[in-house]
Figure 1: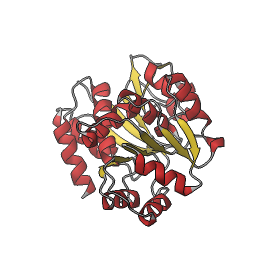
Figure 2 (figure 1 turned 90 degrees about the horizontal axis):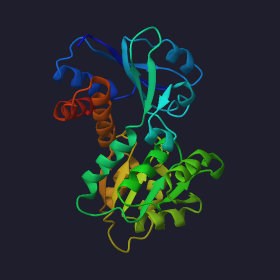
Figure 3 (figure 1 turned 180 degrees about the horizontal axis):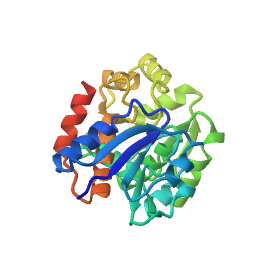
Length: 285
């Protein structure tokens, strides 16, 4: 297979671990001529970048703030990505001067796989989601696959939750949207949950972590937390959660599993999970 290009786009993107994961996969698969880069692209620059894609490209990984902005630039959107309303993977298919651009969502796959690592044999009967961005919409789809269609979703502003509310309606799930204030209501809901997924960016959950640490402890937490942020390691929320006795699934596990699906889609070969996992560990030090 001749060498092709792929990249992760976002703003900022220099911190991304995706290059380490994908490059390790290419090496393990014997795709030495393939390359994978991290390219800083803003929402305003995305259209021009996508217009320049040709048959030399295999695909793109998309991070914030591009997961929703890319939708009108695509020729086809896979059903799951369309329902969720977020694309984190762009596939460049076909030859010629104008290849077909296909949008896919592998975040749902990554969230399901990561949560299953922490849930073991338990079920996601009652879940709490923190945040209402594109990853939160993917989380609603993932939780529905795990048997929870009525999670509590805590948002900083109801005015900014419209896209996720519409995504929930398209999925046929019925989350309850609540504001993060008052904090006591949120921390009580978190403590009662079987599963908590924080989709907040780095440090945005630090105040929630502090509130959890200050609240009186009647009994240990036994639930599973997936904190999609992975910088710093551990996050303040992750540290507070484990101190309470809960099971922590760090955000890099979601990153790993969504990347394995991207590799499969871009190369047409099963992803080398062990090699990617080893590269992730090395990158995280």
